[in-house]
Image 1: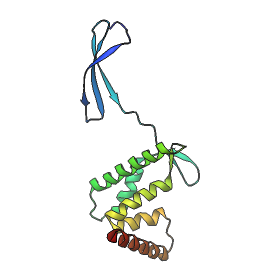
Image 2: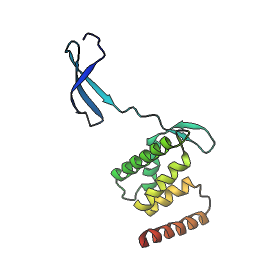
Image 3: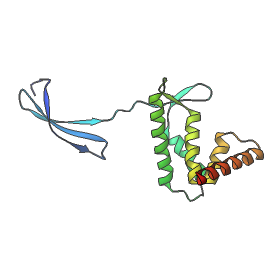
Length: 157
């Protein structure tokens, strides 16, 4: 290749699992042909913990929490992964809109709870008990009342 900066794209197609674009290019000066690959370079997602510390988002921690809440409930691995995907997508969109480019750990917990409420009541309560730091039976009772109210609202509306 002659080092000229002007190249022309001759052909483009998806590569791999669809996570990259393969482009065939030709140098405008010397007609040398070559291939480039383009991939999305995502900005790291940062989580602001309740104590104010920041740490990188770890999707594996989110799915592990969901999996623990769903243990023995007949919830498929696909459902757990789908919730993980939905939550991560939602958080990335929120981070993009925020001034800090970060999301709170509270936002993560709420996003997971919303999805578990639809998927499985028991998994929802298990996750809520950890996320909301239940320390008495009355906490479970209050959350059950809230769950019943939300279920009634969603079925009537």
